[in-house]
Length: 187
Image: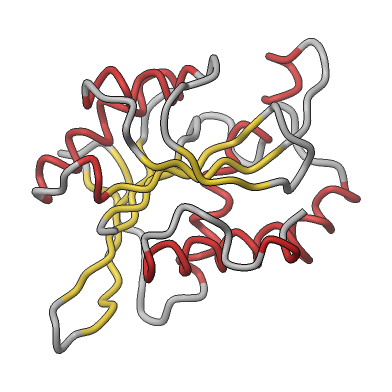
């Protein structure tokens, strides 16, 4: 894995639809010496972490500064600049089909998620790994995904979801395994 990207809408920070951004920001915050930089040519925020300086292994993080439905084209531009192929990318996204905090790693169908559709369109493949993190589902859906989390939900995010998501990403980067590192640990 070389590039981890958030699906999000930068105009609606801290909303349910921005679970990818919230998780990636949390992961970057615990990495020593790593800070986001706005890259205007790419159209988003980027940073890098040296996994093993002796081997020159670098892990890149990217957050597009685009609307959700256009994230894929910005991610493609970033991947092209860094010479990264689709099988070296992990997309972190929200999942309305699962309850808050339920996680899975998968490829394939966008399941109606327009941000994922834009990734598939930009790369011309559905074979891109994604970490889906449940946010629940209420109607009307458009209003729900753009709403902020409640205080109780924020507590769940802080205590369980963020640490587990970071753990999953680290496991995935190290092993490239699509299964969860410890299935009983994840809701």
